[in-house]
Every structure is written in structure tokens, then in C-alpha cells.
Amino acid sequence: MAAVGGVGGSVPVTQLTVEQLGHVRQTTEREIEMLMTKIGELNVAHQKLTASRECATFMGESSTPQPVLVPLTTSIYVPGVIQNPSELMVDVGTGYFISKNPADAASYFSRRMAMMKEQLDKAYGVLNQKRQLFEAVSHLLQNKLEMAQAAQAQAGAQPSG
Picture (tube, rainbow, N blue to C red):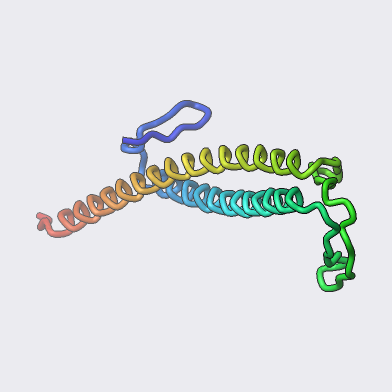
């Protein structure tokens, strides 16, 4: 059976009271929700990296100036031309940009995608563990509640006398 732990060590869930099981269940449910949110964010980031890699690959296949629409805001664009498609400015985070050729840019995005995939795999592993704990605690809590109700019903059915 599963065990829950804290600073003082782990305790088998079968030894927890109904109140403690309820608390563990709520905490685990919140952790599952947070993990699912994080996984969603990682998936969005992975999709953006994929689009960036595909764009870098496309730019590497082009040697002529390319017309583009340059965004000024999310709603306003102006026409422009990419004069040198063999030089890309790659956002490497925190406001830093590095000039790369399309092949190096695509390689950079592939490495970032691999790192993102590792993070996703780890998050899915933790999510599966949390789901198993949630199911085990929920099942045990249900059993303990049913046993308590049966004990109450039996105590109420006995004649006093």
C-alpha cells in the first residue's frame, strides 16, 4: 500500500485517520491539478519550439529575399522583406538574441525541444504517481467511511438493556 511522508518520515496510508486521509486526498488532488497545468504549459512551449525549428529549416531552404508581414502590435502589421535569410536572430531568453544561420538555429531548437521532452516525461511520471496515490487514498477513505457507517448502524441496532 502507498505511504505518505513529510519531515518526520513516511507513514502507511492504512494507519491514517479519516480526517488525515481526507487531507491527503485534497492535497494530492491540488498537486495533480498543478501538475496538469504545468504539463499544459510545457506542451505549449514545446509546440512553439517546434514551430521555430520548422521556420528555421524553411529559412535555410530559401536563398532569395522573402516578403513578410512585420507585427507592430498584435493587430497591426507592415509589409517587409527578409533580405538575408541565411542570418536569423534567435531569442535565447531574458531579452538576449544571438545571430545564427538557419541550420544552427534549427539545431538549437531541437536541443531545447529534447530538454522540454525530458521535463514533460518527468512531469508525466510524477502525475501518474500522484494519480495512483489519489486513487489509493480515495479507495481507502471510502472503505473506512463505510466501515464507520456499518459500525454506527450496528451500534444503533443493538437493544439497550
